[in-house]
Image 1 (spheres, rainbow, N blue to C red):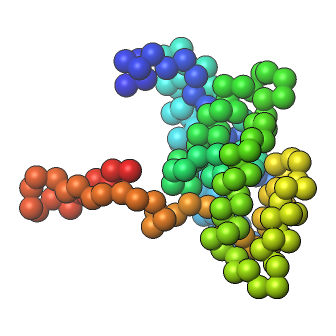
Image 2 (cartoon, helix red, strand yellow):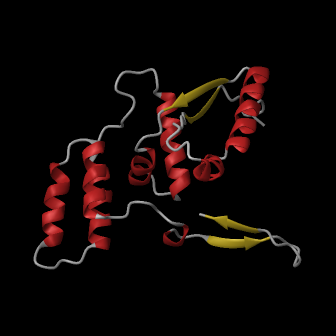
Length: 178
């Protein structure tokens, strides 16, 4: 499939886990959380096929990718963050390519999120909106959302879609079209 679409780059998150607890009780839990066995096999398969097919593998830093992706894209949360990871992979070696520029549409999306989540009691909503427009970087905006306890992730329930089932009545496959 990669050959037929003439893929040149494979962009993925650069995940480096540190050993926090060496305690025997937490060793198995840490192993399950980090999915060591699956991550290793998947990583080696990705390396193998990138080398065979001549695809360049690019690893990017994933920090704030979910926040930026959900603000700039109107898709489901994992899709939005993967679009942001792809953007970072494309612009990895360009100066100032890590964070996208803040647009008026980004602030409009964030103000809509505030309007949908906060009731205007004693001017709280207007105070939050004023603080929002004072933020000048993505890190400051993320900290603002975290301190205000506002949700930015898009769930499947919040998106409009229609269900399509396969032709067979016994089929358990459901397709979702957005």
